[in-house]
Image 1 (cartoon, rainbow, N blue to C red):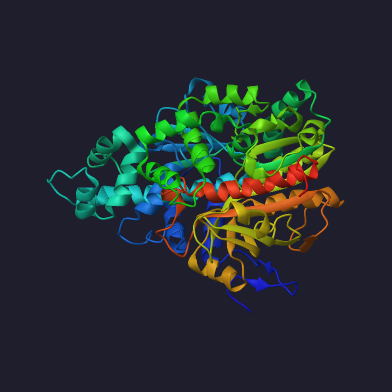
Image 2: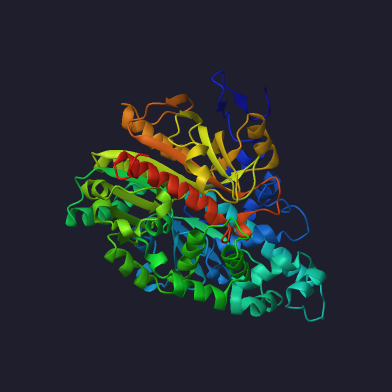
Amino acid sequence: MAERGWETTSSGGTDRAGLSDEVGLYHRTYTTLLRSSGETRVRVLEPSHIAMSSSLHPLAASDQLDLGAFLYAVRRLPDEIAEARLIVLGQEQRQFSDAGFDLTAWPQAESPARRRLWHVGDGVLAVLLASSSDVDDLIPTVVAFQIEWNKIRARLRGCGDTEPPTDPEGLAQAIGGTPDDWQRLRESWGDRFADRLSGMLPGRRCDLRVRSLGMNYVGYARLTRDWWRPVHGAMVTEALHERPIYFVSSNAHAMVNLMTGIARQREGELLRDVERHGPDDLRTELGRIREGRSDGSLENLLYFAARRASERDPDARISAERRAGVIDLLPSGALRVPAQVIPLDRIDPAGVDPRLGPLDHDGLARSEAVIVNIDYPLGASAYNILREITVDVSRLRGVYVLGKAATLNADVGDVMISGVVHDERTRTTYWLDNAFTVEDLQPDLRYGTGLDNQKAVTVRSTFLQNRDHLDFYYREAYTVVEMEAGPYCAAVHELSDADRHPVGEAISLARPAVDFGVIHYASDTPYTQARTLGARGLSFFGMDATYAGSLAILRRILRREGAIRRP
């Protein structure tokens, strides 16, 4: 099959002659512009962004508002973006100080849905990037923000002398969009919502500029080493550094909840909080579970409630986890990836979630193994992190990945297990003997469907896809679209081969040097714009897929360590 910008290989994988033409043009445009040491106006990138016809920003070329894309951008940028005029990109604080930006005197900022370290100056936002994927993620997000901000401003100015409404229904009628999206934007902007809208009228057009202080591969490696150093130091302090390690890339809540029982010990308190404060869907589901009208898991509901409670008092959560044997490590640099160190022999068997199976208490106490769990990183950071760990850890027994993905054939909340991963960055296709099958998850999957024998494609970023791009992969039977599996495969390959990860090849990982498994749960359906996690969220019902995957990973680790009794 020949198609513009694409070729297929005889091995059955895909070999990229380049990104699809429009996506490739956009990628080349911003990467070459960022080589300049000066400031680049974001509006220079708008034509190529629009021409790309991103599946995440389908109305970019239209006068109609695309509040879905705008919400996606708002949630991945700090709130201060609304007042910024310049965004400065760099890897390390030294670069900024050499360029005259004293970040030590600037307050830090975060975004709700993207872990990235920002500093706020007078009209200037400085951002520290942890990998090349950060560039591919950030630049299109900023361009989409500017395009839609200016559309909203134009629509508001078109109301003339009439004071624009500030309620979601009135805004939808007056200037476009849906009441639901306006409500979500109001929730994102909070108390600033009305002032921000009214400020658009007399205010300037959004005309952001971007300046790069330079990024390089060695710098990313150094950032990753700085991230790993305190984790390694904590393991040395606790005499854990020479023990066998299981590396898990998942999230910051599931492993701890399943292994410590902290949430279940607070059941009465957490359920009362749900009954009194909601949210409504959680309160309704609690009633349905109690009445036997729902297949949902009470444990998962407790874990979701505990996560909400811990956001109000994170210090109390960390202290409780420490008492239960878990060491939490929070990042301070550009790589914003929390880590947890969980020695199995320090876990109280009474706290372990019963769904994991019949525990062998003596086997758990005898195990020397340590789980190092990280909150899944973005794109190329996955390779950098796992490679740094494999260089430092001599007794790595397993690598398990649980992450979000878009699905082309399933629905939000379903779970996909792939046997093939194609990485767009390296044009390499990996064939896996995945450690997991649907059978490992099915008992714990109440709402969604499990699909194994799938094929995944690791893309550069969520924005750098269009309908033709997705259609090409779908015709090649690639149904899982994500950003981390390829980099993880590259690092696993280097454990069993004398060469660095390959480029443009088909590689078998049927017999990796460590036990290796990859699980994805569906968070987006790109073919159906209404089902996009970027602007919405999985809520409690996403816990079903998350915990089914987490239970499968922990069950495999405990079985390998002889801590689960055989039936």
